[in-house]
Amino acid sequence: MYLQQSFVLLLFVIDAGFYTCDHLPGSLNYEKQDANTYASWNVDYLKYDNCYADGTKPEERYPVMRDALNATGRPIFFSMCGMFMN
Image (cartoon, rainbow, N blue to C red; front, side, top):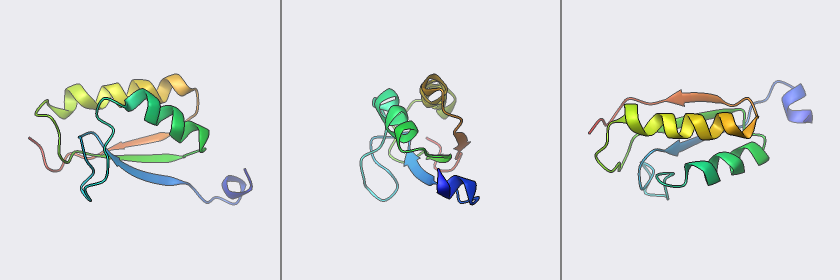
């Protein structure tokens, strides 16, 4: 809580695909689990990239994470990347 009171935000960059752009595990099919983890870590800002996806459009995949984040009850700024479109 001290960090947030000092105006320092906790930022994470993750991915809507099987892997992140750096070849780390992505959130595809793990959105609810990942959202709950980020909320428990008090993440403030989540950038959601679009690397190594499964071929579905971001317009279909991104709402899954949005809804999972909203279900946590923690306000997390959700930034969606449109690069690397399939």
